[in-house]
Amino acid sequence: MNSKNFYESIGGSYEDVMQRLGNESLIERFVKMFPSDESYANLCKAMDAKDWGEVFGASHTLKGICANLSFKNLYEAASVLTEDVRSGTPAASVQDDFNKVCAEYKIVMDALKSEGAA
Image 1 (cartoon, rainbow, N blue to C red):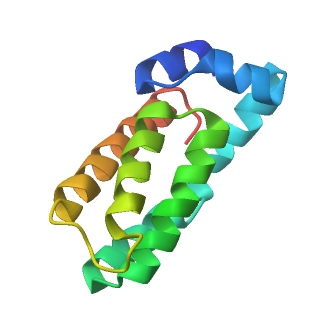
Image 2 (cartoon, rainbow, N blue to C red; image 1 turned 60 degrees about the vertical axis):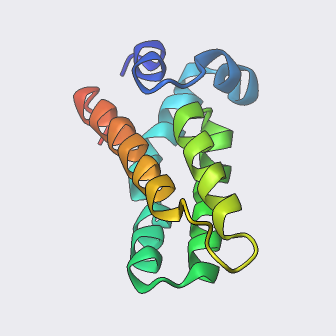
């Protein structure tokens, strides 16, 4: 896996994650664990059920993981969605913002697959 290329392809920050985690093998290890995280699947289920408390929890968890891994574009999309439902009542833009999370998640997963990491 070429981490620099991967981060460039997803709009992430290799420099930030390197500063946070300190070495290439640790970055690769945690990035390869990302597909097994269930927060995105939980988010999709919660959106289908219109369970705004669960949407908040799952999007907040996804946001935190993406912040730690410096997946900037997915982090930003998850952050917007988190704020959409923080009050318990969804913002009018909640579906559009969820769609943005889905699109950014797909970009990350496709990049992982092309790197042989998913």
